[in-house]
Amino acid sequence: MKISNYKLTHCIAYLLLAIIVSSIFLIIWIDYLVSDIILTIFCVAVFSLLMRLQCVVYENSGNCVTFRKHHPFTFKKFIPPFVELPQSSIKDFNCKNNLGVTKLTFKLNSRKRKNTVVKMLLLGFTNSQSKKIVSSLQTIRLNNDNSPFS
Image (tube, rainbow, N blue to C red; front, side):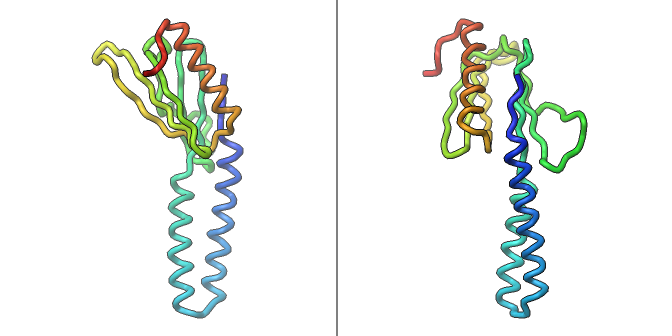
């Protein structure tokens, strides 16, 4: 199973790029110093948002749960995993949805340390995509015979 927020983040990236280009044209066209400074600050803020934007891909392939993060304008064929967890190490998870932001918290059992916690923020997933991720993780939790997060 593969779930991604690629379409939404790609559209947002092009929208932010259009805003930056139009702000640069406004800076060139308007000759007032105050408006130039305000537009420059706005352009830098939007550019920093564009650089921090990330596509997130959730993959559940048999024995591993993988999260990959990359920029929407990255055109690499292979994207290394951001987090890769064996299904047997997932003890429990907690998922909170708030206005398009999904916060995932995993409790893991590893050989080195017991009860390791991994926290992730997933932006731009629709409610149906979040529900698919949660149902997939619930299946993993049931297969590992663990009780729900307390």
